[in-house]
Length: 261
Length: 264
Image 1 (cartoon, one colour):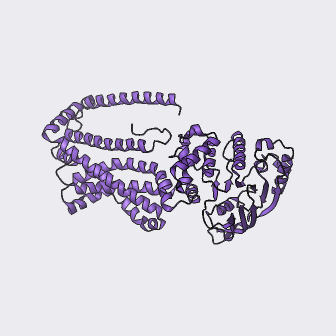
Image 2 (cartoon, rainbow over the protein chains, first blue to last red; image 1 turned 30 degrees about the vertical axis):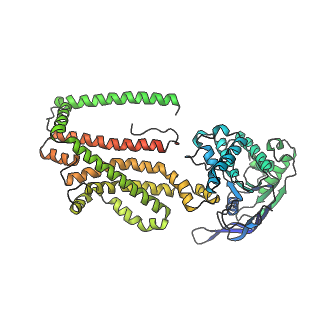
Image 3 (cartoon, each protein chain N blue to C red; image 1 turned 135 degrees about the vertical axis):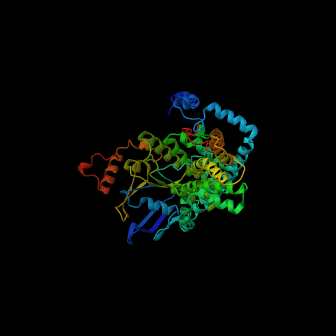
């Protein structure tokens, strides 16, 4: 198991003396090189789970484990990527990619080598010296992906990484992510609202309930081409999986025909 | 804004600006005469220029300007350094900010120039009380801007650095400090103009050096033209200080998207 949550619960003080249970008794495991998606209604604690996995917040109960080691704080095996690209505007593209490895005091020559290789893999070599404001949203998100990969994590935690880019760019980015995960042999936990994204990118999809969030269902996606989501879209059973997910989330009733999946 | 429309804006704006300047100078020269305003109220431009030449030779205008400029530079630099230092310190320590904020607020509300007589009582008719007033007046806008900037750094950026196992010092130098630079420079711009105010008030209150002294001297002589010349020289000193800040800002914040340049 690369990533594991054991009996994780999280309570927040809501400021008026009451406890707010964000996540209740979550158990989940992600195996080596597996890509697992987490879907659920807004506010069900998905992002809280991610923060716990990244070691940024400590759970009220239970614990997260990465490579069998209990997560006590930020650790080098895990890297996260958010909807916001979080690029530093005063750094060039290549300097942004090197941000994590620079903090971890990897020698400069090695940092440069890794960053250049990642930029080449994401077709960004020509933009190495550009500043973030000169890039499109999709390119910025690719730089963020390169920065995440530069620290060579075993587990990637992805929190709606493509929800802020337009639909076409999103498909391209999904394809690049899927190929990169496959090529580098990474394990990933992907939080998404996009059911089609969950089906086309993952080996398994976990469904969370409304708050207090807990995992109510697990659907194994038995489809080929996990490294090529654009081709996977054409698999006839994709529609069935999306339908099942809609049903599990309780959004399959008639007036909701406008749901984009 | 696209490049051609920006060029057009600059060209048109410059033309209008120059036209206004010529109009202003002409109005100054002939306006008072037409309106029957006596010379001791508003001396025409040519008279002010003659006074400028006279002051250069008789009143040591350049020495006084130099003294004022030196005080402005010293007060501005020290005030900015102190303001930035305490801004970062308070920004990093919520406890310190909570404990000190009522005092900072009180000092901020107190009119800083009112301290000038006090400083002169303490330090005599030297340049130091003037510098001290400038330090005090520059300190707050810089402090407040830096403090707010450190406070409003995107917490997700800090979390990103933390997730990479950044130390507290790394978070400061790699995230918080660079993120605070644009507001710091906004504070420095304000400070550069306020420094002149602080120094002049200090010079008005006591001493026999600097443009503030010349102002008081001109007033005593009922020499309106002299007062005008001195105000112009003060504006030049303040303008140069402001320009210097903008030039440094453009070097340091070169990564920012092209902005409307204020001050030109």
